[in-house]
Length: 249
Length: 322
Ligand SMILES: Nc1ncnc2c1ncn2[C@@H]1O[C@H](COP(=O)(O)OP(=O)(O)OP(=O)(O)O)[C@@H](O)[C@H]1O
Ligand SMILES: [Mg+2]
Picture 1: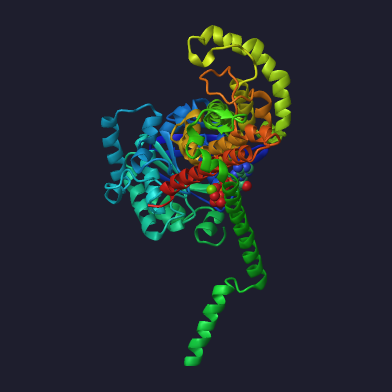
Picture 2: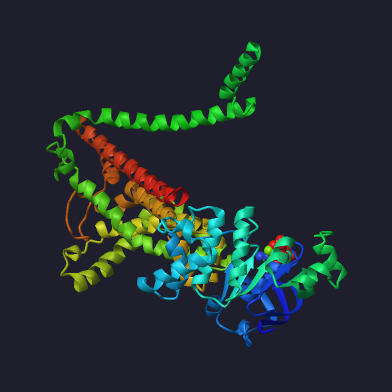
């Protein structure tokens, strides 16, 4: 198992309030890692450390996070976020941009202006995110004028267009209907060939369906981290078992 | 059967007049509706009164009132073109100068400043918006105008004198002083509204941009694009303020109905003319001409505001519906 991100003794703070304690985890490459745990246990905080969005809201961290062996807490966050993309819980397309421009946004931010270069990438990413057939005739429509599920796939396409190595997803399907959810899950399955994916979810079935590995967080600590099968069938920790069986949280 | 139908109808009837099934809500709703209506009626009534009051002048001068450049109360000739020109030019220039500053300050307040600095600064901006205009006028007379006379105008005519805009004797009092004082007056208004508009753009938009690898600057540009209809609205409101500003402008603009390309020359605005000359308007025709001027100002103001709303509305609609 090849390691993509290696987190060592990570602590995360909001002001003086410590919400992640001593997190150490090796995130395998080209696999899907699901993060589960009760509300407020620090799942979002954790994945936001991985692309340094945590510091955008004034948070701070201690410890090391190695991306391909290099400590990402010491690199330029702008460059880092091009390598580690993120899909948010609530779809957040840019309403003042068309569907096309939404997908192209990341490229344009990188200074790519050549339409000949951009067009095929936009098409490829929309196909990859299973949205192409639904929007190919209305690419100049505003990114906010499509359904919530389509918006979320648009946000995924937008993330893919930057060609990241890692994709973080914070409950990407929690605001969606079952059909859109299925589409997103299929998509995640497709994507792991090329990307390392970390997904936060409250949905146990979803975690079981899409992920290869699962980490159970509780009160800012990792209680158990193992292959998904193991976690769901025979967890070694009592708390994990209670949680995945739906007995608390 | 028929009884139950009629009962249902009765219910529908009641629903229509008591939509919320609650007498308190009903009264409140109708009462506020009445207030809203009265505002609307007031506007109509004002327009009508001004129309009536300006009839004599309208009959005498007709369309010439708007295109004739002679404003001569002694000869009883009233052409408002220089006054309309002075009003629009002073307001527009003030807006053009104020807008980049306002957006800059608003961006700083909404996007960059730490909370402990943002609060007092925003408060200060609101404070500036609330200062009575006569105080701006006094400051204009005692500080701004002398400065313009001794420094700004000589400098401009020295460096840019080849342009027609910067020629003539440096009086200090004139269009330039009016433009600058209006700039200072609209700045806080546009700034505070723009700041509010920027703050209303959800944080998720900034996060979306940053997560794609945008710099702070790039994410701000995206936020500005999201907010552009609101910023346009803020600008229009600033224009509305500038165009109707009376006291401060009267105190520094030189008060002469004159069309000149030079910013150094005195000028006049509709609001200042009305304020200055109303007390001396002894003849019926003079009075009527002033009221007609008020009507023009009234119409322009309403037109600008309506346009602002329309633009905001159409832009909003563009992003909200299919
Ligand atoms: N912006 C913030 N400022 C201060 N404290 C915060 C902030 N965001 C989260 N916290 C705190 O950090 C802890 C972890 O929050 P986090 O959002 O990571 O939880 P989560 O596991 O993602 O929860 P959920 O499942 O509800 O999304 C919580 O106790 C929360 O109160
Ligand atoms: Mg969360």
